[in-house]
Length: 97
Image (cartoon, rainbow, N blue to C red; front, side, top):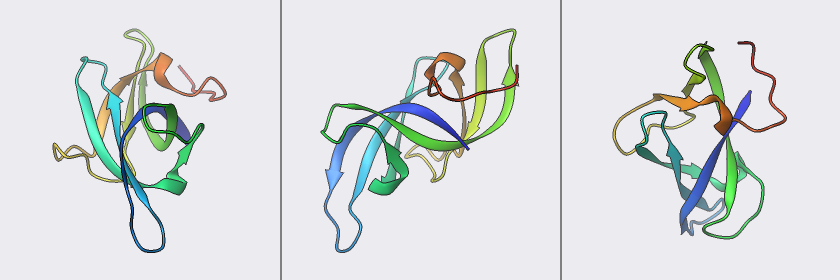
């Protein structure tokens, strides 16, 4: 499982497990917004802090330096997969190019 950089936009308090709305930058420069349970995120805790969301890598395009990832939850736009810059993956991730 890979991790992609995201930004916390909003905290959503819920009974049991709180969730957060995060923004992920696409390779085309658009931001996709996804609501995820807080345990899905890795990194600092505060709003506006850079975090990492666990995703599945579907395809790597080494020529364009982009990765097609599958999100754990559907984005507000309805997208379930998106192209992200290879550089937005966690530095600890090893992705075959």
